[in-house]
Image (tube, rainbow, N blue to C red):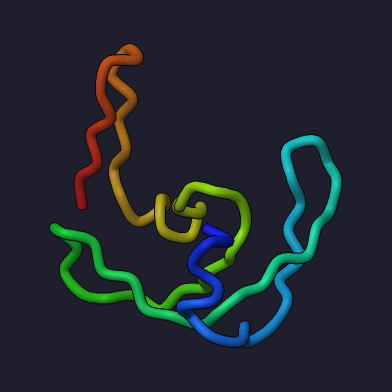
Length: 78
């Protein structure tokens, strides 16, 4: 989230993102490493500071099994 940019320091670069409505925005970005519980090893990633909530991109999601259970729960498996 944007609120963490001050804690992370100066961004490494500006990352261009295409949003769902087709518009393109630039956002502060960092090189980082992500490890989720259940993942066998950390993976390199780009961390983009945009909006108020942390989200995972397709590069991470594609490595996991993600199940939306009828709007009641979200199941994530490595």
